[in-house]
Length: 415
Image (tube, rainbow, N blue to C red; front, side, top):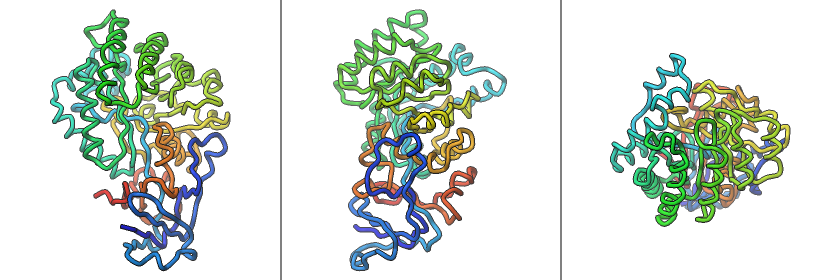
């Protein structure tokens, strides 16, 4: 059914032509139309414009929604890095962090990813699915219309497959667009301590072929960082994954200068994510590539890590994406509006740059740039209707308020 939204105070990121990767100075540019209308039909955006140009004949047979010149429409968020399928929670480690233990110290004590792996192993596929489904609806109501979900809390073939099957069930049972990523190389299991090369061999020779045969993932990822997987481990895994058609994505430079950015660029990773430690060498390696640098502000905030030099990156002409890293240990939140606010307050992005970072550029980082990330004819009708507010800038400024009245995914309101 056709729906026509009228008297919109302003449409934000209304773009006639798709911009698949937004770099440098262009990140401060967004299409804006005041006193506007928006037409959607059959899950897609059909048209938009100023109210004075709306063809009244289009109202016949259509549902009309009047925003009374009080509310804004902007594209739904695209969250390009999450670990939403997990068992239980890790608030005990939260207290450990308060008491001064670092992320690495907690991991060495059997906490962190290994803790989540133990909980996941003890949890049935059905229970995992129910827990994750609640999180999916949580993030949809917070304005997210597409999301990546990684495996990585299995750390053995059986449990990694269990996670990926849960992600598949979420794809089939929820309206949100979900992109699955295979991340077996998230940590070295306790039983492989001192035998990391053997675990990498198992990922390459056993896990990757099985995941490929079951068609359960689109991308392959490695946690290339100090205390986790080396550049050499990463290269071996990515090379093997690419033979099976998996394009790389990389966890890089969260804990140190790891070489993860450079190895991601070398293997044409679609994105390199985290980037808390980033210098001139990494920035130069990313220039003029197809690899999207993706910052995860929630992790830096929650763990007290350095904030990536986003302003320097943009000034160097790079694109930037920002995602939530929703996971139980280092970023237990999928609130992308808060990520947008952090982009402005902690990373010194303009509101326009922040919005591009959580929509168009995250869509690119998932290979969804043709269908998601902007109000563009032909794209999915995924958008937010805000509460009444004075300006677009008020949205990231008011970081403690939701300001989202309704969310539409595939043209239907999420209840």
